[in-house]
Image (cartoon, rainbow, N blue to C red; front, side):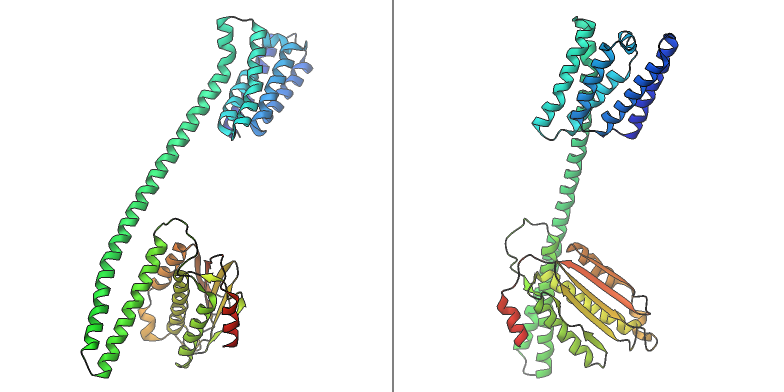
Length: 390
């Protein structure tokens, strides 16, 4: 499609040359000139908005009619006062080069233009000057189109190089992050394990065991998010994939722990297909979202009931909605909130191809909603049956 600016200039030149023709040849029939002008303006729209092949055929037919039919426009054609013809030929030839997506479409677009050149040369006679003048509009359109395509190719190449540079920097950053944090946390795991094996005091051994478990879980989460952040080639089945039923079980355990603290937390009845598989990074992100939402409710909506809902179909949708606060915000916990937790979770969700929204629910409460993609595979049917009978 031709840009609007070019279209306006094209139509303006067509009108201007028609007025000039009337001034030069005052004996021309005004009705004939007006009809010819309307036909050319219609041709402007055809050249601009129809497929290039149709535009090329239109240029060929209108050139034959305007130059051969004894309507008065043949006189203007002989005096080269029909600017529409060369401009339309240039624009159509450029569109054929830029917009053709196959060899057949390119040939079908150029064939009428070759015929147009033959008609134009035949009208003025075969001489070197006439041949050059006749084919120059088409060649000019082709040259401009090639310049446009080269410019677009250069822009795409520069964008590709920039993306490659960013990807390389990101890969290096992830590698450095992995090496630094993994090394130090691994030392924590090994040291806590060593100290736990060398003591016979149960409280100390239990504390060191908790440190080891926490550090190990941190390493697993770090691996999952580094894997998600690092661009990789598509592979087969996700080795870290788990059914949604595992996530629901973990959420039920979180709800049970919250109830032990006398908090009114409910997990909605299953909705969707719990056999759908999600990778470990998505699983961990959803668990973190629940914990963060429950923490925020404890800070800012003391005593408010909280409902957790998990649905898995084409995507996994999680919502954690707390009602209005029964009491005011917890003074100590409220001051510790900075909003960094939700911002970090939103970044993780975007990294995994999903989204997170956190906003008032319109009824005095607050809602955290997460949407993340799932894998195509489903867990075997016996998993759902086992979950149902457990």
